[in-house]
Image (cartoon, rainbow, N blue to C red; front, side, top):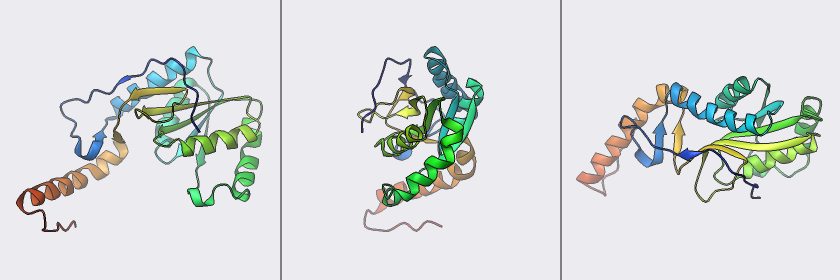
Length: 196
């Protein structure tokens, strides 16, 4: 399902010199994340502020909380089940029932970090719509070129974000593994690299 787009104020992502880009990952700071969320909040406010932000867990939760705070609206979290569990009816009925009292007759913004395939956003939009939302819009931080078009996005780029709380924990280890693999490949492509 493709989302209907509209004009936006998104910009191309221009990484700073301090940001390494192994395998398309960019480590963002808290200040970068706040700037991206402010960009989205400005777009949403110009179009009529939502009353509820539904942030898709996991990558969408923290930026969704920041966005809801900037928009001064309620925040709900929605865990999107694996694709094999969607469409059975039972999962959808249960989730819809749990959201009904919170979204009925309200303007809702469904938010995630990115929408590479759009499947998670589309599923969540269906759930929120079935729960009785008055109007449903979609937003992402990163809109990959050629991907489904949400209503709002902060930047257009073919990258993955290593968000601040993950970057602080995972970046040193990930950077070391990537460097070890890179140097091992230069020495001998046939020699496997063991990661601890």
